[in-house]
Length: 335
Ligand code: 13P
Ligand code: SF4
Image (cartoon, rainbow, N blue to C red; front, side, top):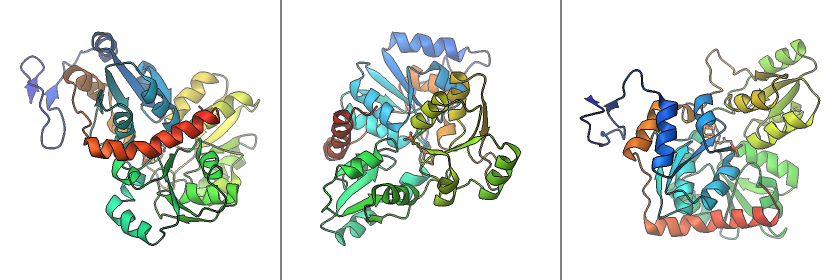
């Protein structure tokens, strides 16, 4: 381990900056200073730890963050989120430096759909339009006609002419939910998010019995049995808006627990209960999202590493379905 003063900024073989920070370092002050000095913007997903959300320039769901990335005039984009999100920001800003505080912040859903295997699968359906959830790799995006996020997915599916057949990848739960909502038959890839599959139906029902006034909010990545009993289903930003739009005082929240920070901030007098997972660990925190810390955020900004690198060819191909999604969302006024 080197100290800050002697360190040269190099990533070790695991993609980490092997640098020790001073124990009394004020990360909030340092990150604020670096933001100004380097004209950097911090984009943070709702699933980041509270301190990171509080220092971010934009907090949002996947669509809002992609829209913010498409618009930013900053020189450096620091993505406090996971790899596919930082990749999307890089695809939208090929000439900018995009940093991800921890390169290993991946996504079980993206991992569940390897592009070479999907390419073979797709060959069986040459007439189908491919709609991919943004939670997938840049390679998968190159095999996609239009990307969607949880907040525009229904709209994107409905924008596809009724006579066209659809493949939906990689989330089977979101796919099944969309099939039900839109009435469109789809070929659905068998992938899932490890966080949204962990909720225990039995424990949620018990919690509801103890809090009979509470409304159950669920993200569409949850399994159908949870969605069937939910009072409201939506993307992270839609769930947050919903908590502000109703008089209800108690909510059970079936999505990653990071969103509770913004829900509580927006509604200080209301009570938010994380939906319990089917074991005793804190599994409704995404282990990938939570790899980012204030220390790693500071180091990434100080040393401008780890950086996202993608080939020009990959960027060109992966950009088309993202641009299509942004265009359709803009036409519909979705944000
Ligand atoms: P949204 O940001 O679209 O709500 O999706 C949640 C998610 O799982 C991000 O990884
Ligand atoms: Fe991926 Fe699920 Fe984590 Fe989102 S919450 S980054 S979908 S593993």
